[in-house]
Image 1: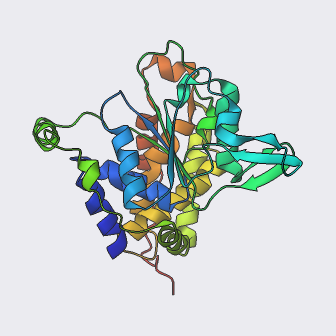
Image 2: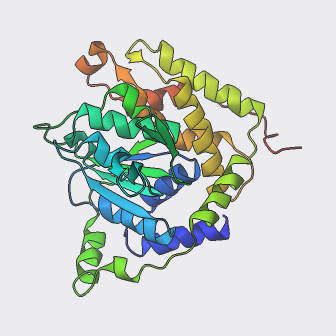
Length: 315
């Protein structure tokens, strides 16, 4: 494993206890130039996870607590007339940062959701006809509570597709719960987190991930898996081309975190559910039989044969 990525994870694990897999997935998504949707009940550490990453990665961070009256201009920014200069002046919105924590994104209006998700996809915002690029790197960690839908606006599939992964952290086990209570009795562990890198260092890591080699057999394997989602009788809407590209990027990031400069079929298999489950729309027949997207995807992994050749390294 890359020494820097190992140090990043070690520092975050000092705060986010017992969730090593979740920490690795978020870092993988960031290195894959993607955005993360953390879907879980309140109080399990979603915000702590996001703040830990912002401090360890040395990123400028902003947080928006979404409510029903949050406006698109709060996110994108707005123009006001500057009397001294005699021209319109752009006032930055929350999106003008490296890491945006979008808390409870399902509690705001569809218009505001769309404004944020458009910026996530295009990498810039347009206000009064003027385009402003977003800082680089730019990552959104969005959270939503899946329990209790009163007063919420669910993200449609087309917008869920903008997140490279959807994941949940879950409750800690009994031992970890005791460790959390003991550790936070006198202080907040976030206060002692040390920065390991900065925006430039993270950008270099992202460039290294993009150079990770992927053999033609791996591309064909991903295509076969994606095609399987589109032809499954229990799936109305399968994985899109954007989803297939996301799967490629995450497989590269996973291979990189494993200390390789090439991708193996195991990398694709390891990220397949997290990348693809939220992109599927299941049929009424699937819901009638209590089938889940994760269960169907796991079955597809068994049905699609992985490439047997071991010539996955770049010659």
